[in-house]
Image (cartoon, rainbow, N blue to C red):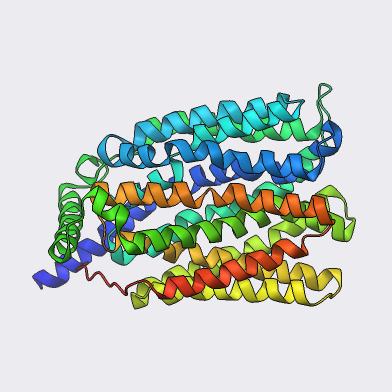
Length: 431
């Protein structure tokens, strides 16, 4: 009877924590990802108005990640050692202001500077959130929690692309639609940053919205998980950063991010060139692969938590995306089938994310986990610079994206193989 009551209390507590935190974190990431990638929709007007070619646009889109690189590791450690609530509030207000400032650029240099500063402002948000989830969710719930959080990526496109497409048609106060896009999509980050200061709770023992029994259960479950990891091996920060699996995970993430952001930044432009459709219709079409990815991501995260298996759930999406790009690069089907190939590749790449991030947290904890997650995201997101720039450069030189697809499909296949070389790890936690 006592065991059953404890299990019921644990299940109730886990659900209450999820209901309290995940919807809010989801909204924050929707706004973050929209501000990071709305440049892809602005690309339907901005380069033509400002006279930017594909090379200039690709460099500006990707240079965001050079700025992002600088504060990733410190940002994750700040969340672990200081305060997620205060750090996230600072991040959101700063990037909201800079995002609004994007509306007033005129030259390539201004474009590069503002995208770089936007990366600096947002640095630390994503790894900080992954670390923050480990403060509240046990390993058995972590893939589902990450899947719910990262569902913001496809949802931001599903909601943001039509909105951004509609804003492109607006010409108020003498400003073009793409300028209003940055103003109206940057402002919510400032408001939500202020809300974050008051809404988030840093640690379970500080949660007044949990009753004492629920707080005690959460703290005890997470402490037991840390003790289990330390019983196997206790990592210092420097030991963790030199661990072979951490290095492999960083390479894998770099490759996935290169492909993912290449699609995120360039897909509207590719669809526009293939179809000749209006900006608004292009924006609606881009929502399709993201809607499919949203569903697939949740299924993969749920099944991974249910089975406790991570490697194959992470490798198979990489293989599938590589196969889709191979089909696009090898055959020359009509426009509809090319779009289907894009959609399938994007859907597969999204399945990767909820099962990838629980892997390092299966053997790392506390500062070691924070430093490694920050480092992996920091170095991995340089792919967010390399991928879009590569596509822009090859498109500028060859008037085709085909060569870049060949590079990406080989890299994704290699990343899938690398994933299978990781040591199998299962963290048994009593919940």
